[in-house]
Image (cartoon, rainbow, N blue to C red; front, side, top):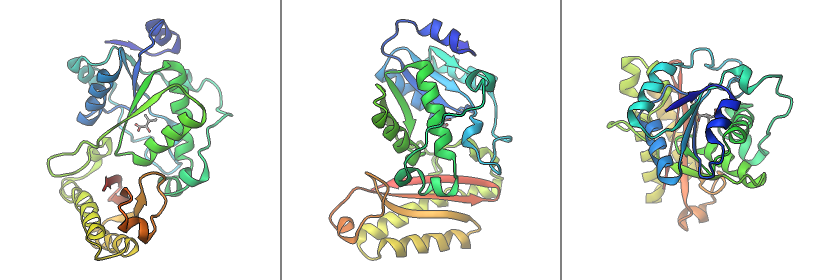
Length: 280
Ligand code: PAF
């Protein structure tokens, strides 16, 4: 695997390549990332991964400074898996050589709800860096995980609206045996919090079962889930049942008519904010 830190070196490596499959990451790679790389390899050649902790998508009180930076270990993991041909690991000066005056602002409907409401500026930061990375790598396909469900939808919408010739592939959320979605932020959980954390997924399953059974409406199921989280020591931002196609709340008719739904949540356990979702 070639490790390159500049856009020029990246372009040298990729000259003439028309089937590049790309996996953007912020590093601290775990099994879920490696699984994204494997999916990329099934859909293109060569596979390019990037590692860049993007300041623009972090709010002033968020965990940019403590976000784990483990480049040497990440390189070892990628080399052991042998799926990636080039790793692009630019520093901030390379990707943001001057103040970023042009930014991608996702529309209100998708960009300002759920994560967009609780993390203002997050999707602007993600869209802007993803567009930059796409412009550097020029992939034919790019792979994103479904754990960041709304991010996946924002990236898809951006590609559609800017006519970017990139096909976005979604990878299922990878979970530990106890159901906890893999995330670089799980390493911040204390032993006690780690034992509690899988209940977030358990709660999503309960909401799904309640809605499916027709016993409770979406608002009641969401409210009960928020209450349960609080009782268990979480500080939830939202539990929301939404339509898969646009993340808007479903009507009662849609719920009973079999509209594809997803329940999404974000909640803080101690100082760690976790997100998860479940389609049904
Ligand atoms: O999901 C992530 O790791 C990041 O949001 C991404 C897509 C690499 C952009 O910085």
